[in-house]
Amino acid sequence: MLELCRKMVFVLGLVAFFAGSAVYGAHFYLSEYGEKVSIGKSGDVGLKDAVTVNFSVPVMGKEYLKDVKIFPNEKANVSFDKSNRNIVITPIGFWKPESEYMIMLPAGKTTMLTNFASQKISFKTQGYPRIVKLVPANSSKDVIIDTEEPITVDFDKSTKGFFVKFDLSPESELAYENNATKTQFRLLPKGSVLDGTHYELKISIKPESSGDENYRQIYTGYFDTLPAAPVAWEKDFTLRLGQARRFTKPKISQGRYIDVNLSEQIMTIFEDGKLLDAFMISSGKRGMETPKGEHQVYNKAPRAYSREYGLYMPNWMAITASGAVGIHELPEWPNGYKEGAAHLGIPVSHGCIRLGVGPAKQVFDWADIGTKVIVY
Image 1 (tube, rainbow, N blue to C red):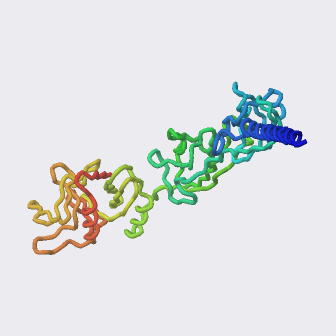
Image 2 (image 1 turned 120 degrees about the vertical axis):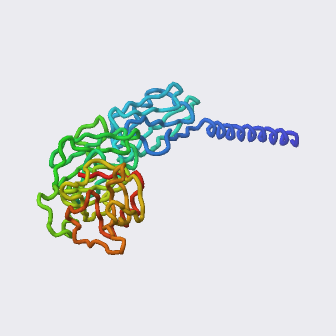
Image 3 (image 1 turned 30 degrees about the horizontal axis):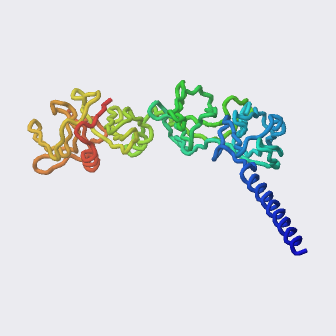
């Protein structure tokens, strides 16, 4: 009897051992060959990019693909790659920007004969490029638009994959160029830019290869161009200087230059196309006119002396190679008498360009040898 009991215990032990081994084996098999799913790309998906769903174990049967759904519904080609471990989903048109999609995966079976449950996996699409800088800024006044200073639009990221539309009103056909990364556009009306005109600018964007109904407006603003220079300049010199500061347009857009308007007896100074200041002058009288044209500062002296006229000319800057003509402060006699400012605004000099006491020092300190001087 004792022997029988021992045999029964042994048999029961074997049964328990094999049963435990079977459970452990099944658990190990499922852990090794159970399905794990992940999205192939991290980050936002491009509008025409394929989305890949990765399976840890190959999936059995092409029929599985028929029940793969996309929400919101989007027409797409759905296929396995050669390994049957990756489903590739390619939009027939494009994914909608700034959207979240859900891929509904049905239950299925792996090639290792393990079953897996249905599940969902999501992805987001890239957003629209956004404007980070626009020149001229919205509501700008006295704007000058030309090849040196076009309308410039900067985006926070590349506009590749999108069409950008620019509408300028009054209606103008626009010439434009963009940089290699398509993050900046430079725009210029092909016709004349009208003086003193209120322009409205609208910018819209859509995914390329999509219909016009997909345009989204991302900017609307306006700017006013600089009015035409007045036909009649003010007789009051203070008011005339105000006109000069507003209406004088640069003739050189790079570096420093001195602009001399003989007809209005005004000097303006510019740096990189920006007007810094304006001053009244006195240029050469009739028969001894200041030479017109493009000159430069050839030499400088804080207190030059003219033997020909017996005068000191403070803050001297020669603008002709011979040194015969220059820009300087109101002249002084050797005894210290200084000509007053009454002649500023009137051509009375022997060809030089005279400036008042403060302005002469300002221009002298600002200009370098080689600074261009344009006289007209």
